[in-house]
Length: 487
Ligand SMILES: Nc1ncnc2c1ncn2[C@@H]1O[C@H](COP(=O)(O)OP(=O)(O)O)[C@@H](O)[C@H]1O
Ligand SMILES: O=C(CO)[C@H](O)[C@H](O)COP(=O)(O)O
Image (cartoon, rainbow, N blue to C red; front, side, top):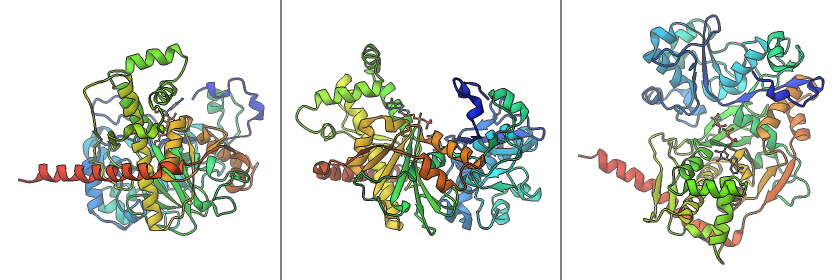
């Protein structure tokens, strides 16, 4: 743990701590020491990252079982969830890892354990990534069916048999050892954690929107979709009753907001894809030099460059003959197909800064079309969404935000605090300390609207045409795969 987090802060003002993190799998032995998750035996590498797709064969076999728990992850389990990763460890590293393992933690639960010594898991991580049900607990038959019956035999002690709602206070709070590491007083309340995207959802979705002329004003919170966009994008929609959306994770009960069901759509690389496209282009060194000379981020430079080259037309029209399918790391939602790949059509021989800027624009648009596809799937299944609430690193990019508004046709609300994921974690801390009596009360007080961006409805027909092309791209990709599979 790190003292940077409290630099320049009066530590006596800190009343509670909340943790969030990606849903990566942490493996410890029976004495809580790190265990290698690799063939090399390097115990510094004891975490399988969320976006690690090594367990492809395992997840295929899990999905072939058609077990009823799969209904609660969108009908198809993702390779990014924990059950396939556990099965991979058992099958590939039985001696060195599986047999020696004492504790498998989701990363947010690992952090709260490290701070408090309490091994209780958050309902959020267990429901969303481990097939636990808030109503019925673990389903023994699932673990037996997929070949992980040993987890059932010891009453789930390795993956969690004490489960707490996010925001519940853990044990006696910060241990003396963790307090020393963090430079904080021992005993400060520590909350049961949330996965990062879920913390972002808490940080934005409950804001008071009065005075912004938004359709969601005075409407139930279920008309809002929180989109947490950083390395990946996660689309968090809530409902009073369970809604089964094919290819969209959930419905998860009480995994984000207590008492509400959650559906979680997602795109596995979004910010990561933009970085990849921009940094891998031949004109990147020139871009970097120009952005540095202006003390700008490369994205701010690209946005201003697009404004220069667009001439009289709207900037989005620069991609009339350049189209991108964004699933360079498979499709998480709503197609739930990890075999899908990225596609670009409309490339030319030139590779100058204009080409880079236009390719970047087409990628931003493709990510926004991916959001439109997810929203349409959620609405077809019963959600009624009128407003997007964006946060995360990508929400700092005005082009990304405007394209989401234009392409979905919905207004986008940005939070006053860009790092709303951290606001969500702070909400947890404020619940654990007893400063608020419920997550809902804390959300209403702590999330604040910053700016609202409305769609340019006059550009709608152009984006509708590009969306038609977008859908053709995946249709064609599937046709190519079928041709190559044939004799
Ligand atoms: N100033 C910026 N302008 C535009 N995009 C940005 C900026 N800073 C970060 N990004 C984008 O946000 C992404 C990272 O978002 P962040 O929320 O920090 O990631 P994570 O989800 O890993 O926490 C980067 O991949 C980058 O594409
Ligand atoms: O699966 C997820 C949430 O359920 C997230 O995509 C994953 O945790 C990583 O997010 P990021 O790196 O974008 O913060």
